Length: 278
Ligand SMILES: *Cc1c(COP(=O)(O)O)cnc(C)c1O
Image 1 (cartoon, rainbow, N blue to C red):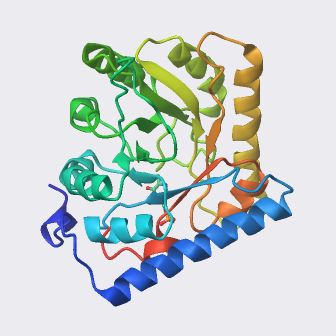
Image 2: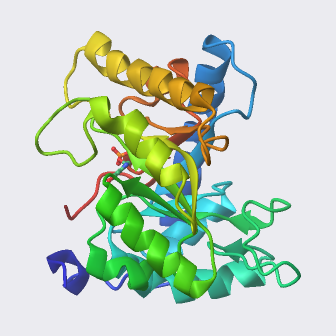
Image 3: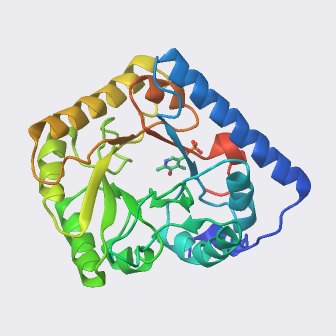
């Protein structure tokens, strides 16, 4: 049990009106910033998706973000996924949305991002192998795959369940020791091996921007991730044709990331405010 989970009831569904408005304002501001960055970069409007990073936020806060226009959420810890998923799924169903894994009864396959009535649920934080079973019933995509060993274990679980799990390969572009992610020099080889695994659908690459103030350094990491993605696509290797996503950009570097080609920005603080825990 992570310490802050004892301080805050993450299943809470009812929040104050003032807090609801604060979160709605946050969502609208972020959507505006995304639109502006798309325009500056000369990119098509709507080409960048907003994923709300919801760690430490309760169900009520997350629903407020969804009601304000968020259409994709991401959690860091398997434990938070487990605690929040039932309440979120129930309240989203009342609004006509399905959360996370959507099974297509006809094909038996999972229908990802179908028809817009779906709120994708991603895992964006480190995953220990013994927690895979915990997250797979809820999340449709795991963005934090950074080794063949982990990919193989997820693939095995997915195959056992008869599902396909979306994965992004996490790359440590900044080289900072505190960060997870594979070495940039291994990314193409790993992506090709993951692409060939049954039970997984390789959807792209993910990185966390360098923890520095220097714009050039931050941008260089994002640009390198984009070139890596392009090389993977150009390789034509089995299972790499869907490796199109670039999940990069957070509260403080989303504009740079969008200019460097991001397709998913993961934003927490700019939507919900500073985190009280972690
Ligand atoms: C917390 C987190 C984010 C969002 O960070 P903010 O700075 O709050 O926008 C994005 N990605 C990951 C992996 C995170 O853990």
